[in-house]
Figure 1 (cartoon, rainbow, N blue to C red):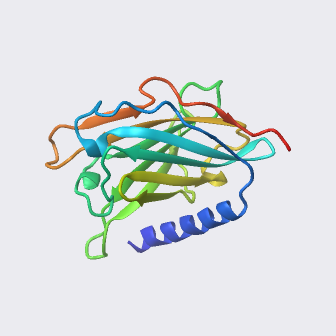
Figure 2 (spheres, rainbow, N blue to C red; figure 1 turned 180 degrees about the vertical axis):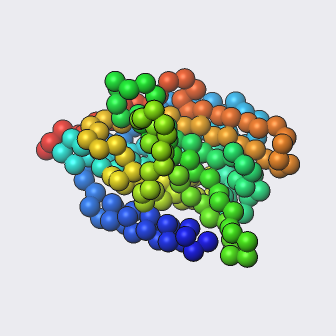
Figure 3 (cartoon, one colour; figure 1 turned 60 degrees about the vertical axis):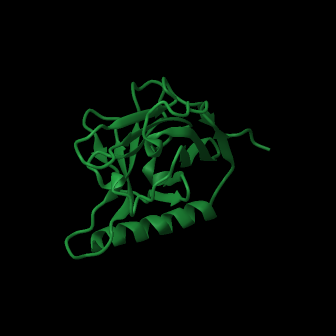
Length: 202
């Protein structure tokens, strides 16, 4: 648990610094996702948007925001504690590379025995090479009641020298009991959301 708290503290500081040093934002929204295309309301994506921060033309920050038909607190909901449950954000910054360069999984980590409550985390993985590799960085996830999930990804979470970005979202929901029906919802249903680039210089 102490290791998790150190990780969260570092992430929170990085997030504050990223906001303080913010440069012009580019923002776009993929098409609204169909309501009710998966049965569980807590696993049904209805909106997925994102903002990108650029310094000159280089990508230095990324902020996805997801709304579900019904929200659930990751720290108290049994569904979030199911293995494999969570919200995955696929990030593409290289048109010449097949697939995403980064994958971010928002999920709940159970506390170590006797060490306190669960923790809501964002695990970032580099998928640009042959073998996926964890990216230790200050990704900060948040839940805003009743039904909004967000994550702030500072520059150290993102590929170096990226000049554009687009995303796709996958919600995998496994309500209790574990081993029952699992729902998977995607936004957009096919392909990627809009590509963001640095806004023109003033």
